[in-house]
Amino acid sequence: MKAKFLVRSAVLLLASVWGFSAQAASRDYVVSYPTASLISETLLEMTPSVNNERNDLMMKLVCDLARNEKSQAEVETFLQRNGVDVSQIPESGNALSLLVNGENQKQKAACASYIATSVIVAGDNKGLYKAVNVTNKDKTLSVKQEIDQDKLNQVMRTRMSIAEANAEFYSLMANALASRGAMSYASYKNQIFDMFSELAPFYLDRVKQLYAGKKGDITLLSLSKGDYRVMDDKGYVMSFSQGAVDLEVKGITWFGNGKMLGKEYYLDVPYFSQPAASAEPKSKALKKRK
Image 1 (spheres, helix red, strand yellow):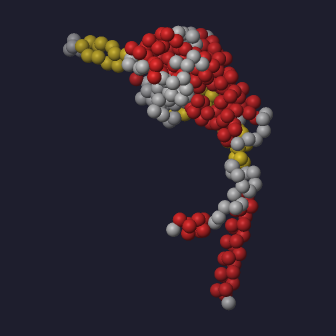
Image 2 (tube, one colour):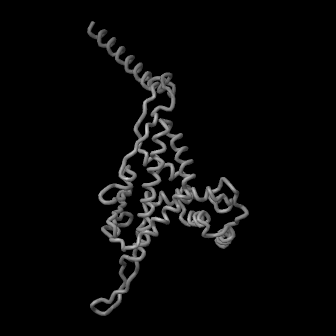
Image 3 (cartoon, one colour):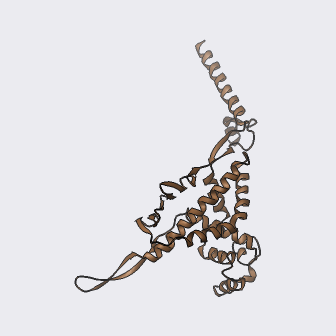
């Protein structure tokens, strides 16, 4: 009698659990997704790549065309000198298409996304050093590596300018997305793609404007192979550590840690793309596989 009661209870429990799961999955459950992450993910996908890797040389040429700093003829001459048959590059569908198709708006969008994401991906700081000859006590000469202050100023002013521009333009897009109501993850990314493509020329101008306003020496607080922490003459502190970038302005997180201009943004994203009420229990699915 007791065994039958336990079996019946177990059956009812399993039925109720499965019934609840099917019913719950059919609702529009949403998760609160950090907007900064969503924007970064989209911009990384917008950045052209070669063999699924960022290519600094190619993107420098794309940016030269986007900013009208090189003519189409100059870029094609450079490619031919480096063994690239320009006539074999299609106008679309190839990693190098942006170098030959003359589509300036797409070039600007690609350049802007490449620049914006350059501060959120890990890099190498070896270019910040220079070789210096040192006279030893025994009057022999040796070479040691030390920080090149001019290079440090150039690189870190650039990174700070990009992070400041990111804070502004991420915030612009975050506010726009928040007013459009909940939509799917893919739809949000499409919206970001369209917005940033439209904003790209203004973003590129803003980075240049911010860089032009930076004059004083950069103070190095810490440096390793890929990580760094620096401060400019205005007291702005920028760091990259363990895969995360952070820009602090007067003690406020301006960009990084999910914040833009000191504020966190989140978007409601439906977790289930479609009702799962008709899905079979895992036990049945396993039986079919067998």
